[in-house]
Amino acid sequence: MDLLEAGKIVNTHGLRGEVKVVPWTDHPEDFENIEYVFVKKKTGDERLDIESVRYQKNNVLLKFSQIKDISEAEKYKELTLYAPREMFELEEGAHFIADLLGLDVMDIDTGEKIGVIADVFNTGSNDIYDVKREGKKNLLIPVIDDVVKEIDTDGGYVKIFMMEGLDDEV
Image (tube, rainbow, N blue to C red):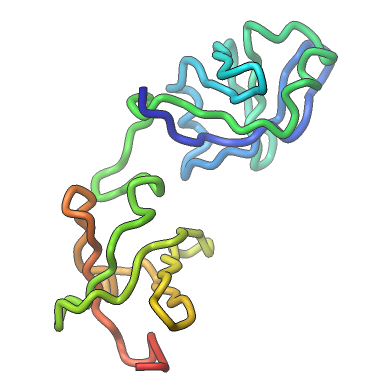
């Protein structure tokens, strides 16, 4: 089963076993389509069935059928939630971060390999690719239409236009 990181349990909520989750998805309401998640514990992976989903500020409050009270919920604090890939719906042109990590970044004009995507983070207005390069400092690439021209996860690459000022070392 192909699992993706969906969020992290950061605290308990109330006395009936609800947990507060920081979602790692673009849309917290994605949790409404997720039937169950897994947590990795020392004893192995444990499946937790989602009974209810509520929202509190930027967090998601989840009730799992296996967790009955606050003392049980305490044992799950700081654990990462993993959900099956097929439970997520992607918008047209969107990609899972897990699929972008490790892709080659190529200059669309020269075909030259610039580096490899090491991380993806969001600034609020757009995503940023953190590109690891051989013998140089990492390059931060804004994920905007003027720069990112083609993404081919099956082909293993992203083609970008190196705008002036994007890399002062060139």
